[in-house]
Length: 109
Length: 110
Image (tube, rainbow over all chains, first blue to last red; front, top):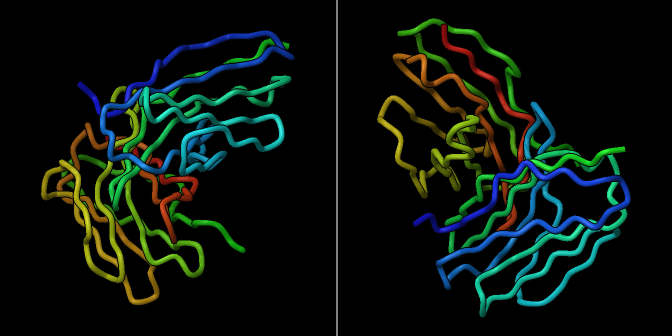
């Protein structure tokens, strides 16, 4: 079993829809949780970075962490075609960081 | 503040050759990590350097090596290239838990 599981998609939604991206994990020692966005042929870009359980909002993006269920989510409101990319979750404990395999998201105009 | 800079952006080599990739981290960041990204395997951790010392290592053969200089700049070397080494090689620097990535070096092995 992988330490971090992420549905690879692809996920296709119409412009303006709310998008929900999710990851589950098995290692309860993970304390830091991140979401990255990666456009084709580019490096991953850090979107959100959270430490504790609960919600963190930044513009149209909300990151949610549920440590009791070992489940994290990224919500995108009012999705735009420019949000079309691969989204990777990542989590860390001590100096170890593990990435999910990424979910390909496509926003249809 | 300048981001993570990787050079070169693209590289074409033939089997058996060796290659060196370079990474300049964000100013003030002392940790540099290297990853290999392929469509089939996703993002795979190669190694991490902190203050010129290798702190963590992934499950890659000894053909993959790296080093870090006193100014935190890092290099990654792959010797005896194989076709399967074709990938996007990403460098990330960090000052805390979050990692900030460069644009990557796309290596093609023919």
